[in-house]
Image (spheres, rainbow, N blue to C red):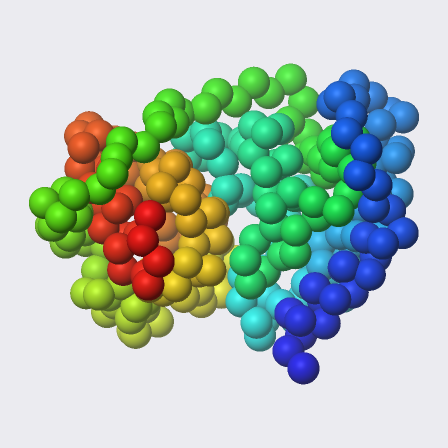
Length: 256
């Protein structure tokens, strides 16, 4: 059985002891909230992220070395999944989205936790990194997608894909087999080799596979990986961004 499957099952079982379906207002980020968050963390997160949040838990070490991306280092590591500009901390809502939805193929959904418990564990996770104290990250504009996509727009998206070099990593047809990937040139901030997403599989879109989620990934980039932000390049032409989004979605069997 694959290590990732074992981790997912273990995490799911852990949730049974803490899951609650009551909805709650976001609690104040104080010592009491963080103390409760620590309890949730130790049951559901420690196995991968480690006692001190360094991404070096018993399962996390194996995941990073053999199975794929290393679990997030909460001490000082960068955050991939944000709605903020590249290099900035994520919003609390970004962290809440990741905890709730999970990361396909990497981290299970923790939507079984109550809303209050998810906010509590986020408060505790933020306490690992002093940069969060007093920080006020701001989100990039995230407009609603236009639609429906047209054949002409998708064709323009294909041209945009080539123009900005997406094929160098993701391959001519989005299979994740670009030259940079095949040559082993793609590494994360830990120096570990990473593979670009297979864009023909929706599950490989770790930051979400909706049109708006793809737009967010393109504009913010995935910090800590070779995937840069295109806010200062393609971002100057919103139509090209959306055409690229719809082209990427057209590569999978599902249609947007």
